[in-house]
Image (cartoon, rainbow, N blue to C red; front, top):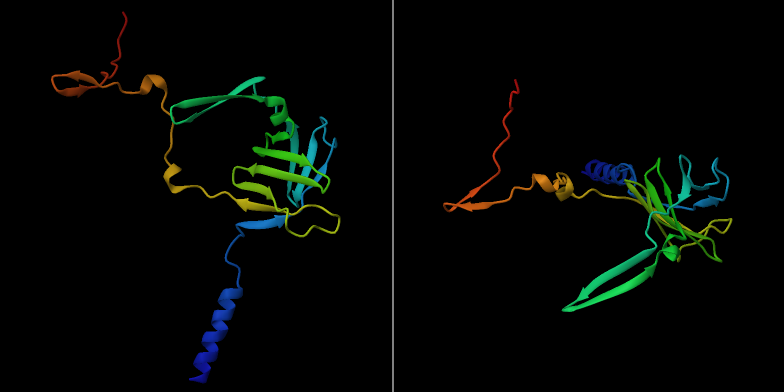
Length: 179
């Protein structure tokens, strides 16, 4: 009986101590290397094997109006896009888009590192030896209900037409032979 109890305890300890697959999140201390790239882009080193070549994002229009509805009232606010674009960067090869904020304490990074990874600063966590701010890198989980999303082109919508109490759809095209 004692052997059975010891065996159960040891097997439970081994099971709990063994890795459960890749970590869904980890702590990183990103390092921003300015103007080190080939085209003057910034290099952002997250960890070994994950370095981004950041280029400025400048795809927003100068006049941007944010409209929101509060009951029957419509509120429109003019937003200065230059302030928004100031800290936005992208890496087209890694499909990353991040916000870089330089503070007195260090560099704060937030956004997507890839289609499957995101990053956010952890201001209250301990810093590294060189004073870098800790960041949480976490995996982006795909939602089950988004697996079969697709976009319909405007001409592919079926417009129901009322005809003899039945809905009628567009007829299918038939090939025509031209002599």
